[in-house]
Image (cartoon, rainbow, N blue to C red; front, side):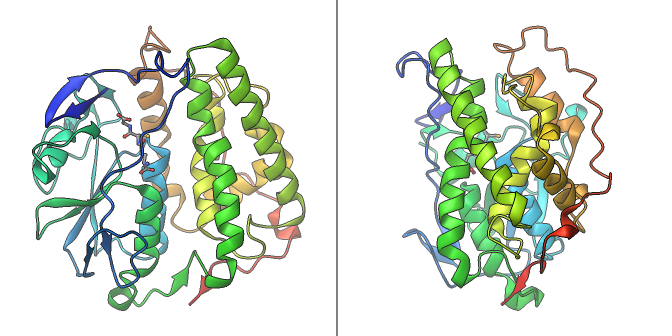
Length: 330
Ligand SMILES: N[C@@H](CCC(=O)N[C@@H](CS)C(=O)NCC(=O)O)C(=O)O
């Protein structure tokens, strides 16, 4: 695990000393856009078939959001994907096939950081997945999953004819508010809890995390989905944390007041989304468990990957008791 400084790789864990034991996530830096409705002030490039390529880890919850959008929006044949190895060690993410990577099927690089130095030879910052790559310019377009979800929601509609809308105009305020709470306290909350290096910092974040889970549990008692009757990007963003929770965050990150299985609404909700057409095939528990338990050796020095828990997301769910309309069409 490390970062680039002026284009040079440095093997270095997050520095929590200078922030009093807090893990502080660096903001994504590469924020160009694809399509006709840019949400950043970066450059906007046109949507074209086979122009863009995704680089993801199946272990990573942020990359997972984008993989789900690719599935739901029918982009499999338009945007190819390279999958990293689940292990993120001294050189960061790699494309080593013998560890379970697909290899970099486009550029043939061995290390993910090489994509960043191809984009900017003097790049300084963390080297993260997911990344959307532009084959025409041989450069990264964007490395922020929240942006990539929005890009995939719209940019390629004319090419695919897929008009599903996971960020409908009239629900945007609701979605934005939910996203803000869930990002801070749940998606990033599990990391702030698990990477804390001071007891009081850990306790603060684990408490905030479970308060947020209780809020969502309550909301899902009377609503099928987070924004009401329609499945939206807010649900996808929550799902990729929930699906990892009992297998990884509960033990490895010490988020252990309760399991997701112990929240009746969340447990049924996560199963409904898992069973949504196309979603189960984006979930790879082997990559997920091997990544966290093996890569973070400061948290798990033996690197033993636990055999359990036994999880069954195929079990029936009870969400049909609440009105739901699926995914909105534009
Ligand atoms: N803001 C980014 C965060 C992505 C992120 O942190 N990905 C993790 C994997 S789960 C990563 O690549 N970490 C490497 C590092 O921080 O050095 C996004 O949502 O796209």
